[in-house]
Length: 272
Image (cartoon, helix red, strand yellow):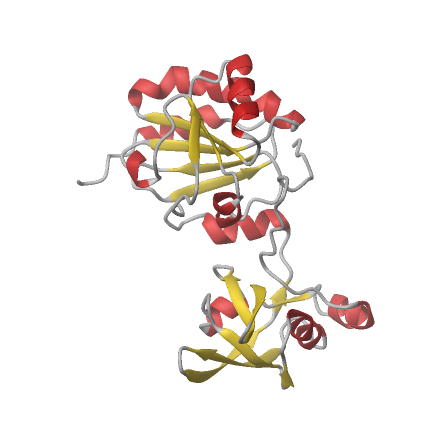
């Protein structure tokens, strides 16, 4: 598999926070890796805000939601993200910790069993596969028939490609995606490309590469973050009902997208 191991320009994806600090590394490794809670945190006027909760993570299982504010983690009062990191790192995989957080005007408590830190690929799949494809935010079309939203493609099988002009593996995969669009477009396949780069640069590149499918830009990275993209290319496979069926990080020359596309096209369209 060939992957451009670089975040899309201007992005800092912080999904699935919390690795053990060096002082606790030996203990963490002895019980199965670094302890992981599964949240991305933000600071605001109220303290430590949960900006994202990874699906299937310890925090998700404990009932922590996006927008909650953490107050106490594993017995330690927390006022910034680094406090949470230290509190989690002081424990090991399999430990059950108590989390206290505020939601609205109330305070709640929950227990979370720390898991082993997943790989980046696993994180993306946990967040997306089996769930409805996230709504796009702040995107604009620059070439081809770029859909206005995920909802607008309901009834189609979608190959959503996060890519960049500087990404070598992206350049290799683009002609293959173009060929799939040409072969299966009439049967309901929609290939869509999204880049965080300058609209004029992306439009010119799409023209030079012969990208006849819909290409758009995500100027502030909002949609790219929503899809937890951390390296390029990342291809999200969406079925006719709008559910994510697979995610491929990097370009794998041995992968058979043709087989996947044909299988999904054979599935019935959802009821109106």
